[in-house]
Length: 265
Image 1 (tube, rainbow, N blue to C red):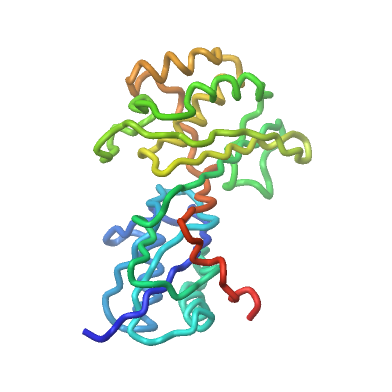
Image 2 (cartoon, rainbow, N blue to C red; image 1 turned 120 degrees about the horizontal axis):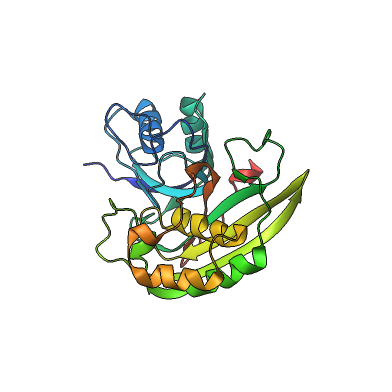
């Protein structure tokens, strides 16, 4: 086997056309699209690894993956070549760097960060359509923050876990769950900033859906604690739709993109 050079890729994508990140035979996936592009550059089977396996319809602002290449590519040329073969799909390599062989996009990651966007206004979404979850009635963000306080730290998140989740344990540590209101024409967007080392399947969407019910007045803030402690999926609020969710950042001990000059090319 020839020596391989490993590259870290920062990837942006619109999740609507895809069944999610993970490759599935006969279905359109983000991983499959990138691997197909790599196969046109270096004709062989490619198997890339990513920091997080986003679900169908979920977007990526800064997904991180790594690939191993036989040729000694400059990061600029590699990213340009992949992007050329990704057209016209809504997937783009926005940064690319050569990394050591021991870098692993998934196992080296120390924290994943997700953004969830909720548009609160009566008028239909136009420019934001497909990129936000729209609700028409006002939300009390102070009550939502009070409810969210019951989810920070280490807990059994069985209530907020999909029934098909394959994680070995429902116990996770939520490092941050913050909300802010961003004024938009005719209303506001509520942005959720959710951070943890790792997440359960549907955990973020389940949390957002439950807190939206708090903001709408259907649940009291303390109900979130009771819902959490029930450890029953049926106790959860409605699961929010995938198109409001974005993988927004992946943290590593040493940022592989810190010294990147790709944007200066």
